Image (cartoon, rainbow, N blue to C red; front, side, top):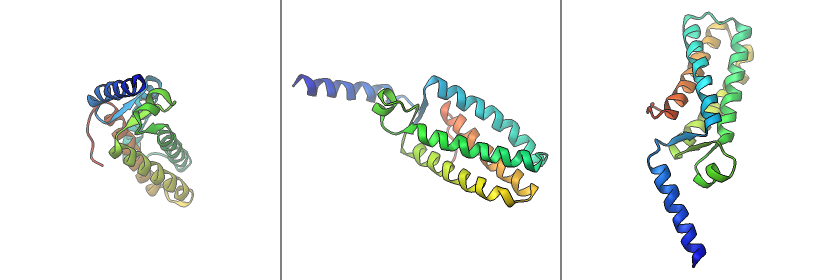
Amino acid sequence: MKKILAIVLMLAFVTVVFSGCNGFTAKSAMAATIDLNTATASSDLIDAKAGTIPDVFAKAKIAGYADVFAFYANAKTTNPFAYLFGGKTIWVNGEYATRLDRANVRAAETATRATTQPTAWLNSAIVGEATVQIDVGNALHGNRSTP
């Protein structure tokens, strides 16, 4: 009986803790990483819209976004216990879990295609990837973005 009571109290605690969350929460080191990536994405967005990122750098940036989104997808969980005790560093609701998974798949596909694309396509791809990263940063800070 005490074990059941402890589980119920833990579930109540987790529910109260996460009920105030916006659906996207990250532990401090991951939050700092997301903020840094978002700042980089903001700069990339300006350069890519201007079409000034050379091919070699654009391809590297696109590969970098693929790595970042794979990292986020691996670090996320919808299970509060995995977030609190299991080593996951991003806790998300179902909507954000789906969005991070889609971003991961799309970034990987974009990185694969980038090897043979012209400069305009590469800069356009960076606009897309940077926009998604900025959305992730906004979600972390409680700003809703459109899927």
